[in-house]
Image 1: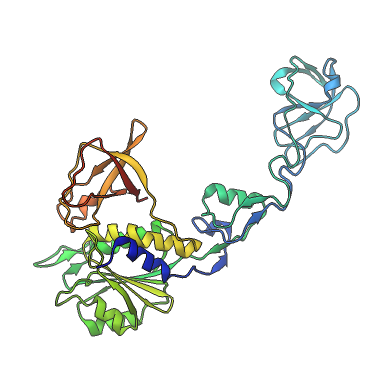
Image 2: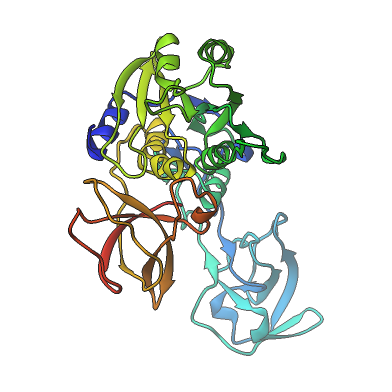
Length: 395
């Protein structure tokens, strides 16, 4: 067995960043920007009013002003102001030539075309051209994962087709003669397949594209034929069959398909039988069949891999500090690396970790509420409620 750190290093060392595509903004959410985005225009592109009110010259504010027109958003006032004149102006509208201040509407009294200023504010309430960004300024740097604010910034800069990393294409097969679909009632030795739902949701949550998902019998020839018919993919995930039992076919299946084995077995609980292999640029994992092992292995290895495929940057597993809550229970540990699913909540402004009371690694319902992994101390050590602990967030 290899260590968790060595396993993650091996996974990332054999990965290559994915190629870039130009996508419409509506399809770019969650993708990673590959090229710096720069403003094509000044922002604002003209001096604009920050308030609804009246555009005027400060030197004239002591006298009654004569209203000569209006400037609204999208339709500015074309002329210039003379002495003692003002223009009705609305928020975001262009400031007319000759104006050096905007008087807020609530600071004025109007009678027809006559406007009196009741209060002279020292502020100009004018947003100057380019005060947000100048043309050519960096708006969103390369390597940024695009969320709603970043997409809005790209739109404001005229970047309608950002160059982003394409979504990783993933194929998933689940093995086991005992498995039936979630909408069926198991009979005899059958159980419902929860791993297909779990993997599909995790991949979607991490921005990957699930190009195929198949259920396979524990038959090597039939499974190999099904594998050969999968559409092109960057990553192949096999649920189950990763151990060394008589019906565990994952390793033989990958070897028959031409994959080169990099490791089989990690000093990890849960998730020890994890297998990693490669064929060209396609990476394959055989995941231990239990759902808790799936969840742990995904966050320790597959989530960092997906981040690397998008960004090309190998980052360590994120670590936060919190305190151990009073609830839950932790198992005895017999391995150097045990990672236990927990629920992290904010209590008094600080993260608090509650270990989940899992009956076993097959307890899918026991994962409810899991959003963190807690590395457990080595055998012979223990945690106490209130103790400060480092944990891995699992969004």
